[in-house]
Amino acid sequence: QVRLVESGGGLVQAGGSLRLSCAASGLTFSSYNMGWFRQAPGKEREFVAAISRRGDSTYFVDSEKGRFTISRDNTKNTVYLQLNSLKPEDTAIYYCAAQFGLYSATVGRMTSQYTYFGQGTQVTVSS
Image (cartoon, rainbow, N blue to C red; front, top):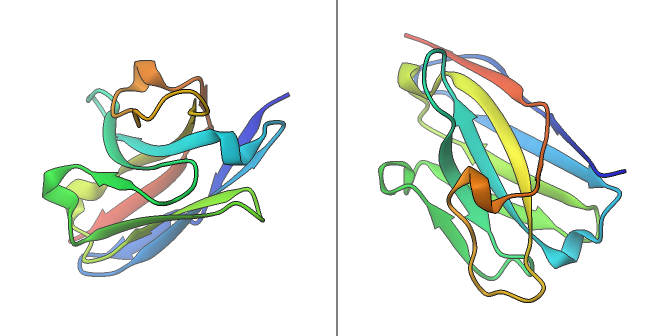
């Protein structure tokens, strides 16, 4: 059974930082591209960042470039999302997701391209 478990969310003041983690089990982690999505109240789930299965390519929403960093440790089956210079509009539930990437070089930016999602971790940024 595949499990993705996010952690590291919390309440932070604007300008602060958080490091989210997502621990994966039940799959061959190095065969999966990993992504982060977020969903704010009343809004659709949106793409935040993704990393290729080997960790050699990363992708971000243009508005987040320079503030967010994604990384992974395939020896620990864990993907990370570093959130810096947080703004109140970053408040959302953050989800990690896994996309099988063994036979395709395309790293997804849409939820439909990902097979597995975690339960999410809440990030709240106060002004």
